[in-house]
Length: 131
Image (cartoon, rainbow, N blue to C red; front, side, top):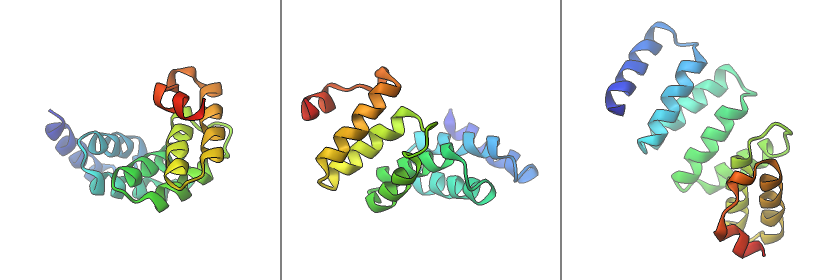
């Protein structure tokens, strides 16, 4: 089903290449389908047109982490997690990247910040790690 949606979104973007809302739907759909290099390209295009888009930066960070590009994900998350409006899910992802980088204290801070923003992101795994 998503294959047809992707084709239709790509076709629509040929007529409206600056429609970042449409491009965001395409990027997220590609990410759901684990087509990470293509999703990365779309998120980067959104950022080229709208450099301050928190959602595009967050999507790019998710795609980078999924591809094992942890340094890239870390840098993006470090930047966006200082923003007040950043979604809790990005703080969770940053906590995981910090753990992978052997920074447990900072990871714990990001996790606690995330669950203060939205308790729905709380996980047993991270609760166990951070006590």
